Length: 607
Ligand code: AGP
Picture 1 (cartoon, protein in one colour):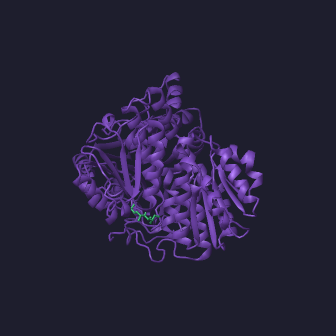
Picture 2 (picture 1 turned 90 degrees about the horizontal axis):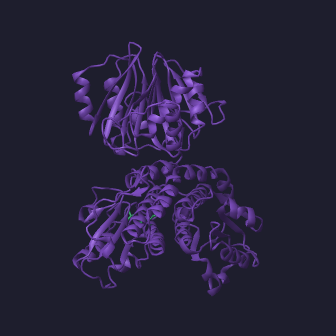
Picture 3 (picture 1 turned 120 degrees about the horizontal axis):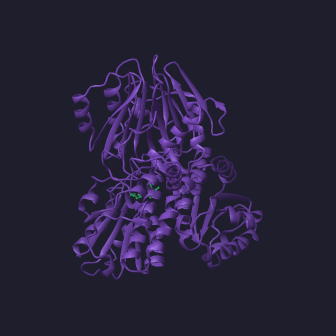
């Protein structure tokens, strides 16, 4: 994730912007920069690498301006160099951006047709030019920004500065976080309250689709329809905590909401959107020479591994074994020298998974670790790290780490298929393009939150709840059941939908809700017939499907939750959102400790 800040101050802002950016370093970055209005003119200083490189340049050419914007960049479009570093300029517009503009290629083609020349490979510069075009057409700054946002697809947060406008900052968000800081005769914008903590603890969190228009003495907020709106002023504890709840009631809610942002960040590490290719780090084995892969993990990470099995076997045609690490480490699995083992762990400290890693290495396997904590034990003992960029995950129930694990595993599956000659350029580009739509589709899936809360309250007093899924949606059924049971304490089980008639259907009666996870894919009709089997026995069906599935079969369900229609390849990532929200709202309704459920630890470092 990139970090963005803006200050309308009463004193020189250059070093204050750097101070704010330092508090966003945890998000990871490879370049940084600031832009200020010096005597009404836009000036900027940027540097590759760490913030100290930027500070050196600022010390060499001090800036006295009292308003400016700043950015720490994690490269998505364009190499991590000074040219591509933010802030980007276009005429009188300076902009910093966190997120991914999905349709930037077509927008850039339009600009080129209008005779506009772009100086970088970034999607952000395209946005700056679009705003400049609107200003030139006579729009006032707020209208110019709104007219530009209406053209964008993807997940983003912006902070924008305008030449000649010494007392104006505009911020906007869709899918990536942004907060306003209230000072005394000063106003601030930042990716989160942590960035603003050096200046204020009075914060207003923007909601999805909001735009903020700031002067040193005022804040005007507009919602996604362009209507004036109000958002609560909150007092944060960010100065005490490295990570705050971002205006959410629980860390789990914040982390569910962060998924468009962090999945986009993780994707950007492995997908080259321009070339339509996957870019893995150097692997310790020749992927083309593998005869199979074994995957071990625990809990939610294990379910990510199960989904990877479907991806790898379907598109790379390579046999995959997946084990829970606590079993794998004792079953004496035969492993051949030089083979590849995958381990998956958010914390990188889970004892069983670490033991499984050591078992594999002791038998001559090379180990690739999908981890969220790069300095963890599992990361250090692996031969290669496939890092997720979920950021710190505080809630014990894993959510954003899970979808980031799936994102990495999907990219790995595509690269493996290419290496084995099972996928051509066109096939790879098709899947990379489908993945490029994830942030936007995750934003849309999150918009079902209110409806899912209502559904959760209707089933929260159940004694037992079943989750059904077929094919690659079976791991999602298992994960949905785990989410629910670990934070609401309701007994829940995930089953392969086709397995129900072999015993579990005996559990069904009108007191047992059944959650059916069924995108309108090739297995949809079979899953629907399973759904009707349980409906015939009085069960209340909660059907989680896409718009197409809902149109055909929603009427048979007690409740239908809709997910955006997308390539079935992406289903494990998109359908994670509703099962996470269902569990979250059931737990909140029941009053359990959502972030710290009983008996559980965030990282199980004992056997
Ligand atoms: C997931 O919600 C649980 N908190 C738990 O199953 C977790 O996924 C498991 O303990 C593995 O943790 P790790 O990913 O840090 O290895």
